[in-house]
Length: 419
Image (tube, rainbow, N blue to C red; front, side, top):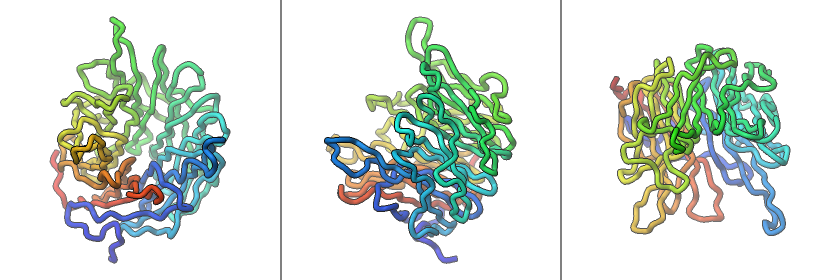
């Protein structure tokens, strides 16, 4: 097999050389997402943000969802990205899942010119867009935003944060059939609460028709103080199954709290791994012993906590993503790393493998990023047989050069995995 640039130079258990995906119309590339299916990795991202024009007169946006495929050798299969959604205004925050036949990409969309809606589109493994400009999943009053998607073995389940009440964000979900039909036209309310928001849900499934949904919020203690609140429940046939399977209301059990968004999650052999950001709005991060990831069993019970970190001095990880490589979880994130005496930190992408029980298989692997050329907004996809692809925003040294999607690959098929 001829190695593509993604696998060139790869030693056993070590990431390959860095490679790059082609640009769409020479626009900056933002927020990539990746998924594997039918022998190809599919990467989608937001192409562009601010439209050309005089910012002193008006700010206008132009952000499309585009995609590119990469084969298992690391070779890009598309000479240029294909457009998944080119609607007016801004489309952003894409996420993807594979449903046995096709990929489904979801994103938040501002084409109505006033607030966010959730859209989705199917893409074949051959790169054909089956739903040009998307399927409207939820377009109610106010914002529907930050969607996530999984394949539950029967249909795609999409979850998002929804402000249709005009008072509090709630968690809603809807299913899309393999044929592209919206099975829950109004969406199904999965979670709401009095006196606080339910933010940024994430979802994963073992493919048995059952999905685990986890989200964050904030609550109030009896003495008026704030306490962290994270909740998880199961969804079957598009509806919540029973009460919350997991509820964290204690400061003694670190995170995820209201600032721990977005959360990422994947399903493994007999457990889920969730990982979340730990930087506060003021950038101070959490306590030195605070967890930023946890193992949940298939009943939704939290079984193990762990702390991911690539920089010894760091206390924060940002924008996590998780995949299952067949024997372990693969987690990717970025950190703010100070490598010089200058007070300005670098954005650096790290990755690690985690055993099903929560033990680190390897220490954090540095993938990309330095002060003169930062890397951030990472994602990961795996073929389920040990080969994983990591993609991320790679920012250039010069301001007149567009941001690209960089990627590296890891073959861990021959690596041992502890329990």
